[in-house]
Structure formats: structure tokens, C-alpha cells
Image (cartoon, rainbow, N blue to C red; front, side, top):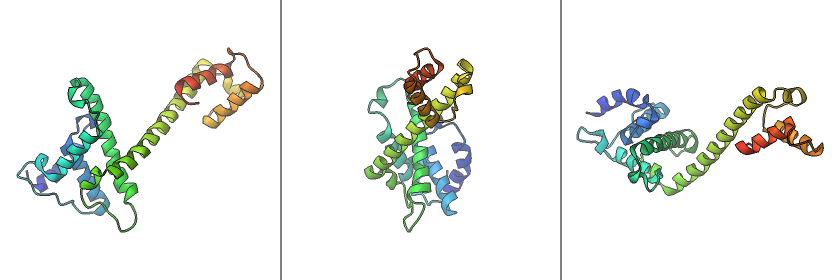
Length: 199
């Protein structure tokens, strides 16, 4: 396989579910993103017909190993599949973050794959990604809570607005101020929100 053939395969490879991705697919996504941002193909270090043996794919294999749990090799194939999807999604977001946020302005740009292995870069992304996942989980839980309340206690919407976390905080203040019983709609709602980690 030469580089033209590799680039022809990229759309097919990156359209597959993330759980099936490997270091070659991650490199392919990097090349896709590079071309989308800069309008030119990334010039890969030449390989002898095997994209898996090139420097760039080896960098992504190292990155996967860096982000995977230390006991990854000893896990069952089902556990590995689940973790592989999580790690591949993280690396996919890491690539996007590097191109779309970290180096979107100024003279600096992505010139190779080695940058993804820098501990300072990984640590900065890990902090931001963890914060993003926490916000997303909180938002998802809030959506679930509202849906649950509509089914379980629709009358609570007659007395209160419940669209976001701030509304929930107001309901908690209302519950505490009027010392409502534990079986009131407000108390049940607040307890459910605490259980879900929304509050």
C-alpha cells in the first residue's frame, strides 16, 4: 500500500465505530484532520507497504498504551473492547483538541505526531477532558432527572420551574426554607438529584 492508497482508505476506516479503531485508524484520523485544517496531505514517514510500521502509527500505538490502564494486557477481551472504545474516543478528542483549540491561532502548528506524546500536552488535555466529561455527565443526569420528574411527579412543574441546575437549587432553598416533609415532591426531587450527582 502506498500513500495514495492509504489516503483513499481513510474515509472508510474512520467511519467505523471507535471500538474497532487501532493505531493505524488513529493515524488515519490524524491525517484526515491535518488535511481538513491545512488543505494539504500530511507527508508520512515512508513505509514498506505497511502503514502500521511507520513512525506516525507507532506514535499512536505508544499514545494508546500511555492512556490505557496498566493492567490492560491482562484484561478479558470484552473488558479490552470496552476500554479500547473509551481510549480511542479520548484520542479522537485529543486530536481534535490539538488542531481545533491548542494550535488554532498564531505561528504554532502541528508538524508531526510526536507532539501527542509530550507529557505536558497529555496532562493539559487530561485535565480539560476530565472536566468536560464531568459537565457532560451532570448535564445528562439533569436531563434524566427532568424526564423522571415529568413521569413521577408532574405536579411539581405546576409549582416550580425546572429547566436547569439553577432551578433545582431554588427548589432546594424553597424546600429548606419551608421545612417540607421528606415525602413532599420537592424533597423527593432533591434527594433524587443528590443520588444522581446533579447536586
